[in-house]
Image (cartoon, rainbow, N blue to C red; front, side, top):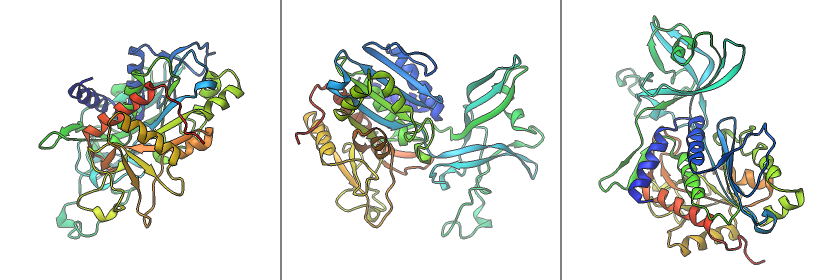
Length: 427
């Protein structure tokens, strides 16, 4: 795919993916169109060599390609990422009537950077669970698409120290305004356009998002700016790579929800989703364990690019530069799962393909984040490394990355799924 077509397709994916549910649905549609067979966890699986995918909670996805060669003899080429991003989630009973206005209360999901949420044109998307008139319960994805909410800043005249020392109360300061209170009394009134006669809203998983679309910016169009780049960029790159996988290789992508809140859920990396799928695609426990011993997982999640205005916040020898290639993420305390063997494999893979590669280490006097890499490695015992696209403003409502880095990551994952070399180093 040409870089221009790649960029257009990426922007389209980001626009259609305001929530983990929509991202998973969009990626599932791409897989279907490319001939992947959808499996359902409720069904008995009758699997032959071929290409398949399965979702859980409508927000996590595992897709895999089975070759004619046994997993026990070849291992599995695995790529992991996560579908969720920090945001504002509607409370179960969110209605607030205050000073003539109808507002919806929210919980902060994940480690969101809250200041940028003010003064944005916001919409609502996610999943609603409805009771139908015939007594059934069903899920339905919705997206208002148009701006329907706003969180106004307090005028500087009323907060003269706003530019010096401003804290944000996540309970009271970020309650979005929806309309005048005469228009809506309940959440169900607000959601009425998404229900039919006889249907009743039972519960929701709904999120606010910025309606400003992702864009390619900069004087030379070098940068990508948008919401949820962490970690939808990795999800996109993983699927793009798998679609071009060599049919003779056993390959898999694992896209988990709930990474931003610790991964401890049925759909998260600390849940059973991946183990359950592996148990169903391997003939017996012996084949599974031999296969995992031969496998490698590339955990892909964004890295902190060295910020030119705050370079002192970065380790002086390990500040990745935007558009200079994916960064291998290291941490001595296993907040990232990279070791010398897995890093060495990835470096050689990049160098063989003439793709630049960088390395990231957090400052020793600052706390280090983590991702699905160490969790997945400890759950299933697979050798793992963590890599990521360098980003500014991570966890903001809009983030910035180098567009070339997305292309580089997709290219190296495609190479990973296509080469037939052994996945390990010699002892």
